[in-house]
Amino acid sequence: MSVAADALGMEWVKFRTVRSTYWTLLFAVVATIGIGALVCVVHINRINHLSPGDRLEFDAVRFSLAGVQLAQLAVGVLGVLVMTNEYTTGVIRATFAAVPQRRLVLAAKGVVFAVAVFVIGEIASFAAFFVGQSILATKSVNVPIGNPGVLRAVIGAGLYLTVLGLFALGLGALVRHTAGAIATFFGLLLVLPGIVAALPQSWQDAIEKWLPVNAGEAIFRHGRFLGTSHSLAPWTGLGVFAAYAAVALVAAAVLLARRDA
Image (tube, rainbow, N blue to C red; front, side):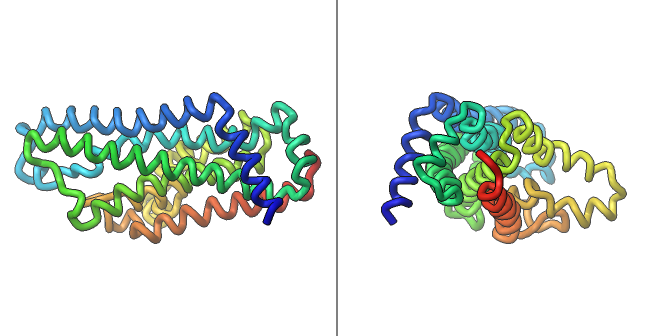
């Protein structure tokens, strides 16, 4: 128990004393709130030109949380750096000398990172929601947080960022090289959906919703973007996304014990 507490304390000190941590998390918060507000302003200016059908499909929750799409890039890069920075600087050897149980080091990094990203992600997603709804309220197209599915979507945005960050941390531990791990992360995040989109429609319908990001995003979808044949149910989607992250972390834990530092 003492070793675990020491490992957590050590990882917390390393996490909070690296300047890039603050800048990356600050960028994620600003992106989540700022982009969400900007998207709401753009759509509020178009509201008078929408047809009655389009007005009924106006998704106030999705517009408020639009910034999560950009924030996820920052969180993913930070997740990779939490692991690869130590290999780049050689600090990993001192870390393993202080705590020889390598899997415990990985677990401590994951816990510290997940708690920090979850807290920041929830603060950012709630702030983005309320800022966005205050903008949309000027045209009376806002939605209260008590409406069905709204609170789940807002909390889900923070959960999504947390799982995505852990997925990136697992990739960083597997690849151990910053450029390679970030390339792998962006490949899975951005390139893979494009490749699937080039497949025949029947293949797309079968594969698309199971892709890591598409599955994870179901937790903060709302309205007409939820419950279609192209989307998993919210908690099922988050569970699938968490399974991807768990596979990456378990594979990293196995290799971490077998490879040289």
